[in-house]
Image (cartoon, rainbow, N blue to C red; front, side, top):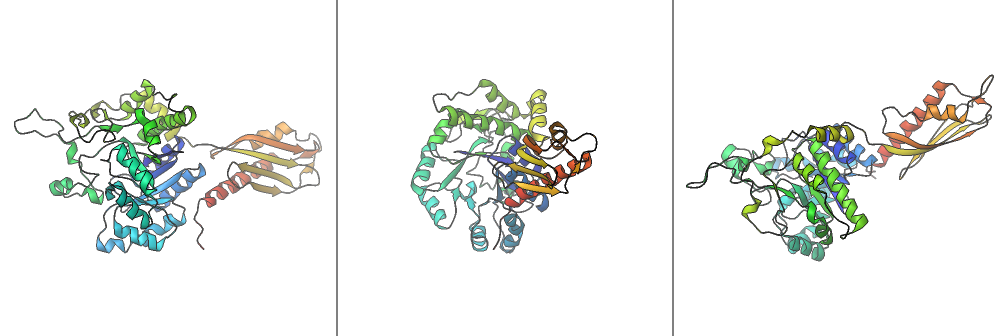
Amino acid sequence: MTELLAPAGSYESLVAAVNAGADAVYMGGTRFGARAYAQNPETDRFIDGIRYAHRYGSKVYMTVNTLFKPGEIKELKEYIKPYYHSGVDAVLVQDLGALKVLRESYPDLPIHASTQMTVANVDSAIFLKRLGLTRVVPARELSLAEIKKIRDEAQIEVETFVHGALCYCYSGQCLMSSLIGGRSGNRGRCAQPCRLEYEACGGPATKTLLSLKDLCSIDFLPQLVRAGIDSFKIEGRMKSPRYTAGVTEVWRKYIDLYERSGENGYRVDPKDRKMLSDLYDRGGFTEGYYFEHNGKDMMAWEDRRDRFGQNEDLYEYLDDKYVNSIRKIFIEGRVLVRQGCELELNASAKGHKPCRVTMNMPDRARNRALTEGDIIKQLEKTGGTCFEWTRIEVDTDGESFVPVGVLNELRRGVLTALQKEIDHESERIVQ
C-alpha cells in the first residue's frame, strides 16, 4: 500500500493533514530543519502532534535535514531524545555526521535520506542502506525510470515528491540566497530569490525567469505506483493548514480509487484538478522531471499568486471539515448495571487495548429503575473528546438506580483511561 505523506509547518497543519487522511506527516522542530521560517512547534507541542497522529494510525517523520556546524552536531543527541521517547517514527537527515550520531545514539530509530542528500543512482542508495538508512528520497531531478531502477536494485524504500513547489537548483542545494542575502537554503533559511522578477539582457520584459511551476502528478498516479514508489510526498511546509488539508484530501481520494478500481477505473475528475489549482499553483502545473529532463514548459513565466484566496467556499469547507475539527475515533462499549455487582463500563477502539472502569454497586430503585435508554442517554455523550460511540451494549436487571452524576463520572473515567492508553501505546519503550 502506497503511503501518503503530507507536510506540516505547524501543529495545526499536522492536525489538518491527519484529519484529511494522511498516512504520515513530516514536520520540523525548532532547530535543524530545512524550513526554519515555518511555524515549527516547540517540543511539547510537537509531542502533542505525535500523539494526535498516532491516535489515528498516522506516522510522524521529523526533519533534521540541514547541514550542521561542528559545535551543533554535539547537541543533536539531546535534542532528539524527547521526540525519540515520544515515539517519533523516523528522522530525515542530509548531513552524514548527523546520520552517524543518530545511528550510534538511537540504533532502532528509522532514518531517511533527505532529497538534499542527492541520491541519484543505485550505488548511492545501496551505500546509504549499508549505513543503516531505511528510506531514501532521491534527487528530484531523476526520471521515473531512474527512480524505479533504484527501488528495484537497491531494495530500499523510496519516497518521492508528487505535488507542490519545485526548486530551480539541483535538489535544493542552492547558494544563491546565501550569496545575495546571507540566508542559506542549506541552513533552512532560503529567501527564494528564484521567485523574484528578472530582466534578461536583450530579452523579454521583466518576468520570473528562474521560477518553476508547481509539480502535479495526480494524472499519472498509476505509473508512480507501478514504479514501486513507497511514499507519495506532498511539498508545502510553508503553506497554510487548509492547503495541506485540501491537497491531502485529493491525493487520498485517488490513491484509494486506484487501490480499489485499478488502472482501468482510474480517472481524475476535472473538478479535483481545479481544486488543486485553486489551492495553489505557481504559474500552472508541471509533471516535473518524471518524463522530461528539462524544458521551458516547466517554467512559470508569470507569477499568478495574487489570484489565490478567491475560492471562499472551498476554504470554508476545508476549515470546517479538517482544520478546525477533531477527527473522531469510533468506539464500542458494554455497561453492567445489576444488583450485587459493581457498576462497570468497558470501552474499546479498533486496534487498541480496551479499558474498563468500575464503581460502587448501584442502589435498588425505590421508585423508577433506570431503563436501557436512560443509561445510553448519559453514556453516549462524549463532549469535546475525540471519541464517538458506535454501539453501547447494556446489561441491566431493570431494578437498579444510579444517579446521573455517577453515570457521567463513569463515562468520563473510561474515556480518560482509553485516551491515556492510546497515547501511551505511541511512546517508545526504552529498556
